[in-house]
Amino acid sequence: MLISVGDIDRALTSAIYRSNVPDARDDQPKIGSDMPPRPLTTKPGVARPLTRKLSRLVTLAPDEIAILDDMQSATRVIRRNREIMTEGRKYDALLILIDGVSIRYRILHDGRRQILNIALPGDFIGFPSAFSERALYSITALSDCVVAPVPFVRLLSLFNSQPKLAAAIFWSFACEAAMYAEHLIDVGRRSALERVAHFLLELLTRLQVIGLADDRSFRMPLTQELIGDALGLSVPHVNRTLRQLRDDELVSIEEHIVTIKDVEALSALADFERSYLDQFRLPDIEKY
Image 1 (cartoon, rainbow, N blue to C red):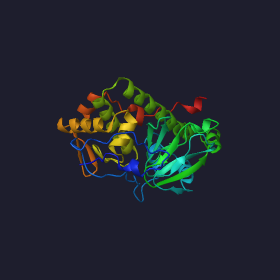
Image 2 (image 1 turned 30 degrees about the vertical axis):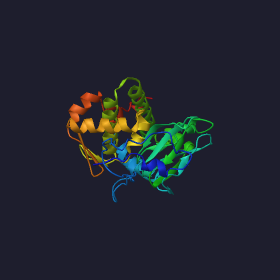
Image 3 (image 1 turned 120 degrees about the vertical axis):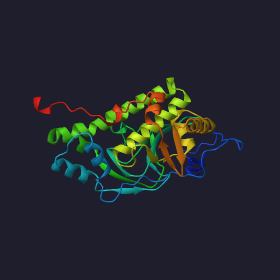
Image 4 (image 1 turned 180 degrees about the horizontal axis):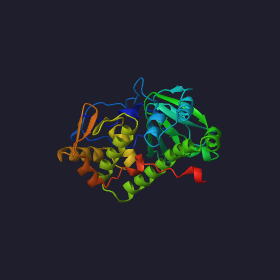
């Protein structure tokens, strides 16, 4: 059994603490017990997360792998609950998330929070702020995170020196934009059941790409309150929805592990198509 109702947010800094979200009622059945976010850590000896992610999309030459590994070599640690980027500040570099989990979010004037996306190992942090005069959103570490700064100008230079690699890297930005589109559909048209189902399948697929999930299961790095903030649902609503998915024998949640018991049925329910997350088409660069 899995997800706690809100312990993580009580531990977050005042900048992202949100007191106006009700906890589930005492008589509301809960799924799981205390579950603070846990780091998602790549295994020793396994390719670095961005390298692993891109190598599943395109065959990388040794020199391209060396460039990617060099980008991920100079790292620093961001402790849990610390801001990685702050809305309104200027940044000239992107960050590659090597280990851990972080969230990009916006706090409204009345204290309500909307989570825009979840960053996992292998993701770039800081897009689209690198294209703006000031950061548009804040990013906070949910667990201890390891990040590798990459100056934006270095990424741009790859279009001259390594165009195939540059195209694969910038695919990740297009993939992020596609996720935003799906999340817009979530809040605009999908029911609560469809939203949660789609969210779980998207998370499963993203973790599979970096080797942190098997065919059907993964460790859930989020609480119910964080899921609710990402999907525009209250905590009790998330809890009831997870219980319905469990009762319908589509999903099981036990000891922090989410298992999709019927991937096809859950995908049909959520209208989930994974191609926006793991398919990449590279035009014939030699023609241009």
